[in-house]
Image (cartoon, rainbow, N blue to C red):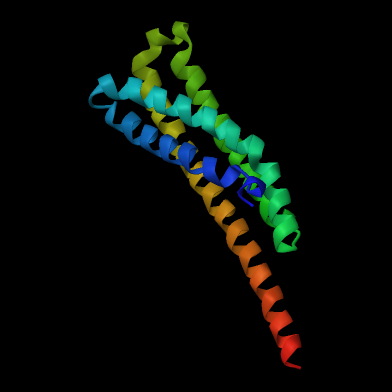
Length: 156
């Protein structure tokens, strides 16, 4: 039974947390650059890798929900995928800006730019989580309404 479960729901919470904590650390880095700027970089990197894994496992989760909860959730899944991809693009850009060595001479300019991008990325990742939650709750409600109609038919 557990082997049927998609891994996506287990992975998605890590990048969300890492990106949000990284954004807080990037904010603190405005006042105290080290160690917070370096810590934010690592949090963004690990979050980005986890985000890629989450994104790649999303289709399996979609198929699982469609199979087990009898519904077409494309109206919910499509925006979720779009928000997830946008989040990965923004946090990927942050990593490029932070990790390219020739950009280090622009460090004083990069910290606020990266912070602004991280705030935007955090908004995107929050919306990604929100739309993912809609998928979960709507699939469960769809299943519950199917069960409720089955119960009603049994009473007739």
